[in-house]
Length: 96
Image (cartoon, rainbow, N blue to C red; front, side, top):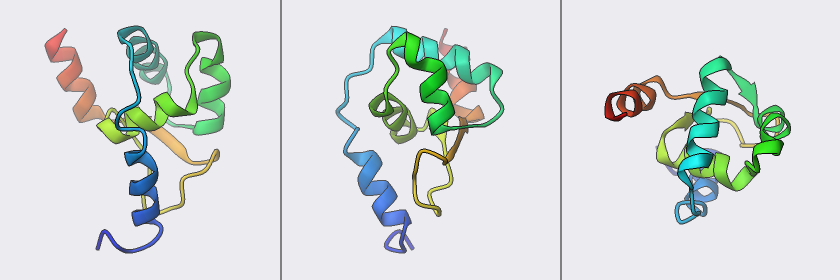
């Protein structure tokens, strides 16, 4: 099932960002932002988080890590909705 498009292309895309560096400040900025947002587009998140130096690379890294979610059955674009993964959020809150 993973070979079904656009899922495969989406997984290849986010995998490219697996090695992207992620600072604790970037993670905390995204955590705080997405706690207030139910769902938003990638484009809106980038505009809102630009003052915090959050780039598309960081958002795609967070999708790769499972901290953020999007519908991988639809091609990832700037209009793709992204939201916090509640399971990842509960793990993060537990570890803090």
